[in-house]
Image 1: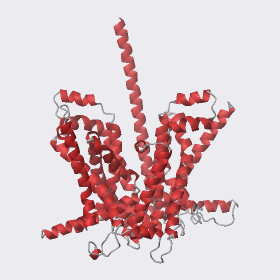
Image 2: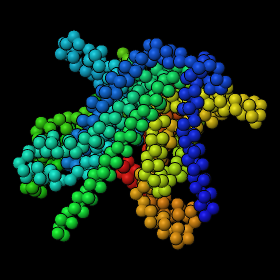
Image 3: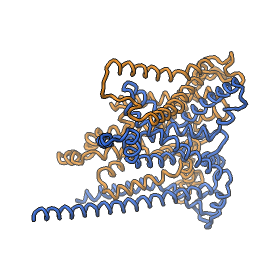
Image 4: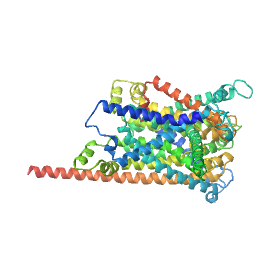
Length: 303
Length: 334
């Protein structure tokens, strides 16, 4: 029995260590956000201050970057979720000999290093837009394709959408595989057309997957550094501004930003946990009711 | 321009070939129950689906990759000369990886950086596997549902903080006047500050820290579906714990292990943040070299060639590993 206790203790100790490794650096950083020295330090704690949050708020480049990050994130979601959905549906219907190649092409951005996605995006679109300019010149139009579209925000959206779409495809495909074809057939038998099946049966079924694809897509776009740093050109996102700041030196304002992000994600996690518990207790109650009803039926059947 | 034009047309030719093949086959083996794509989805929806996927697969994935490869076979030229008579196909960029074009000596620095990046990534992958396996096993097999969900949240929350800030947090700990050095000196364990960033400890820790979650989840998913009775049976038959893991759990979880290891390896071989913010001044990381070609010497073709070398090496390595452990790529990505 005692050896079991030892093992249990060891597992507990290990988990503690693991989460210390995970949270320790973030905790220390959070402390530095409230400490007065110019250089972010946790010890000695010289005095409590909220100045760094004010500094962060007044940091023009960071706020501009935040705005761009949100625009890019929304753009990426707007492209990636429909693309992921369409690709998941086509995956099942595509000509069987082309399926392998299609799968390889659509999944490859997941495994390709972000740096390479960023580089290839910039190289391709530069050539493509320059080609477009040649076409408009031939047509005698006074309009520069490159001048209009060759911008950091556009390229960042394209670059990020290439792998975020693949994430969306995987998420949506996982749920699509559990779709019961009988539902589709029932609707068709009742006289629905194929587009009606799509809008009224398939889409509502896929809704949870679409929502989680959108959330994950936005977050991975928002956090992305490797692809964005190449694709963003002269523009800035929050993360590239952060990288520039961190490279130049360290300021507790960065810690303040981290505190805000940690705060938001903790709040999100707590809300999620509460919702999950409520859902569970509701499911529990429904089960109880079903049991009671069943018993009632049995009794009724008996009499 | 001709090579670029050729590459632009290539994917369309491939699609046309597949389309012709499918036409031919459906005619040869006529199946009255078979419904055409537009019949099944409606014309409007069908067209929208195809346009969306074509835009993605061609313009966001295939063409950019192909253009990068083409670019790497071109010389570095000022914009005005692009597409001119001097814009010929060449392997000079690839040669420059092995032999330095400036002094015609072997390009030891870049070859070393390349080998160092790959070897470090392998080591980080192994380290993360060792750290994450026990936790994933505990979560999948031993923990109660509520505990597991809490642990899960505990894992996810730190990952909402982006890569740069996490690297920054580690630097606060590991810097020469950071918390760890303060503690060590305060406790009298060492008199001198240890240069964690200079001796690359920071880099290793940063890489491992950045990709913990990428390892935990595939492992957890794979082990979770293992029937507890199998472990129980092995234990009842007297197998010691390490044999249970070696002969029962790990073979079962092989696809998850392969997937976690592949992801961590690819991510760390291609990582930019950890070497930039946690490496010392003498740290040579391959992606940093690629970065410098783009932003400091503006030599895009050479950068593209180096990027392609990295990509090819990583894919080859992963394929080799998957073959060695007899896992298919399809299983890995699930």
